[in-house]
Length: 306
Image (cartoon, rainbow, N blue to C red; front, side):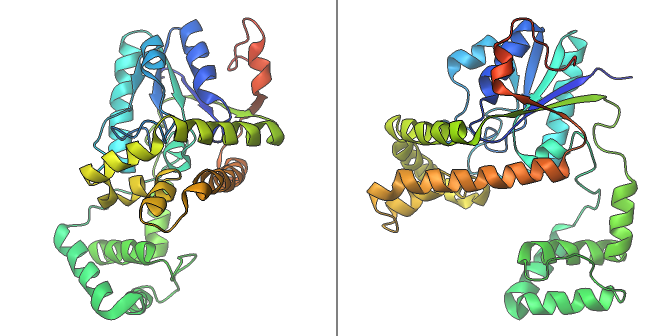
């Protein structure tokens, strides 16, 4: 049996960073980030990345591992996370995974990526077909390859339709068979037992924290950070440039958003993200404990032993 993975999650601005640091310090643990934006170097202010002082308190992993122009995917994340897990366990220390990015978080509990390798030439051919014939041509081919139907595939989503057609072409299998194969696979971390805790905070408190956090980001130089990232070419990476905080600043720099609307726009979009996160946590996470942040003021409180 592998070492226990402790997972601490919760929505944006709930207070995960300080709780994770305190628990890790008290329990001889190292932290593995499960935040899809902390991977990127130089994206510090808008991601609320732990400070240099905070990072020095506890060893952290999977922070600042790629350039902001470089795409990060779930397969690479799993490879890096598994290597970090093994190294931490070999040092005799506990593992604390913390973050709120659903897809990456889910990888610790269930399969999230198949093993279908799509050759570059197939990817290029499907992309050309999409460009020349539109999404309708891809859907038409998919219906031919899947006479029993396309299941729950969102046929209006070009990215999902493209990925579906690529996999059908490469494997010669229907979407239904591919899904069955996928669900039958063990998760990437199936050998490790997992203890999961989700932090919660009263909505009124959370809203106040979101407003204060966004205002602090702008005062600390969020606009200047985005200007530097633009010079590096981070707009080539949609995952980075499309993140909340960054996309609104880009809109302002492009004259699409007046400066006075920057903070309210980021706050509103962050609140919308929190609502989506809460829904995802309720519907996608396995059984877990929900703990109010205030409880962590109790001395000697071990969030994973109850």
